[in-house]
Length: 490
Image (tube, rainbow, N blue to C red; front, side, top):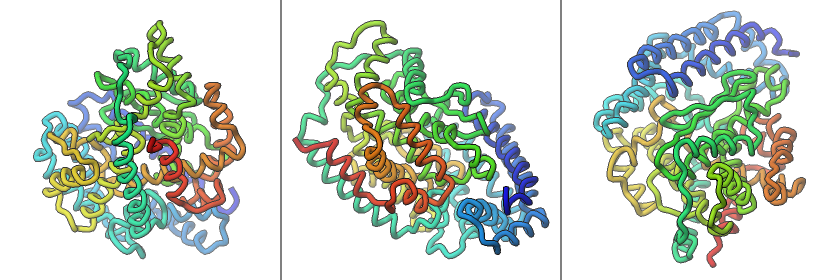
């Protein structure tokens, strides 16, 4: 392990504790009974305390400080920087302060589930106020040279990402999408004239499994379950898991959730041994991770070329042919709708849902918006950007799980993932006839390309990674070109 070999005993223990954290969290989100959730949630701060004890170890700290002075390669530097950031956080806080912050997060998560049952933001508000206050306090402790507290939170999305740069990118993207929406609203693309097949819950589960197999999900190294809010996680080498949500809703939701969460797991399953030898499995930025999930969900999953394969999968499940044309089926998969639910949004409007959340969480953390006013801000921004307003909290501010555990700064990753993904697709097309592979229903060459040209560099910072993969820095233009081509005016 070269220069970082001296850290191995500590890194092994950290890996084990983090795996336990992931196992407990997965259980909480899936099969833990209601009466056991509060008690099990207490395991999260307990395990985190064990991690703190490693970072508090004088010998571990000294080794990191010494390595920080060394001439390290980019991978070694990434590893040292990640752990030094946690050491510095520990050195600037007390155990009581960290425990209080984590307790507010764990209690908030349980309260959010109850609030959803009650459809009441008012019930959740006292917990949310504590979460925002805790996130602000944590950001203050972690702050280095960032220009705002929210910029500290953005570290989890992309290292070094500046609030002003994100404002500029989102302003450009938002302006384009709003203009495009006005054009698309005047075309037949926004209408759905053909009645599509319905799928029962059991049929939706079969379709989701077929979708995972299609994109190359390794069922020997992965597992799936169900949860209120779909998610995926890397639990350890050979253990990547995802969840989905099934019900009376349109089957497109669970289908694209399978593509999305499966895309995450393909990244986890695609890391090479060097990734694990350097203990860098937790180093990819959130924007990097969301790039791969949205790549399979949208750039491939919603493409016209993949329509025959998806139709065939449904026909196999139904045991009868679909009485609908490929063109109408494609329009159904890509129907533009001014919806309230982010996870069910079409590809064109999705980024507006992210911009709304970005603006709200930015103002919350920077102290420009109070939690008690967040619900109204949510309604106003939906009216401004999408022309719709939620009638209840389930379809409004209570729909996402992210803020409940203090994960502010995560939402921009979804939109950044769209931008990164479009850049990667343009680069990939120079080596592979992507459309032809989709027509054949064979995505293996696409996954192989990612495993060779993309996944090995995921542990680098966002700007270094995207330059390594595409040869270019982050830009909104490839995604704008993609949307402009996919949603023509005529």
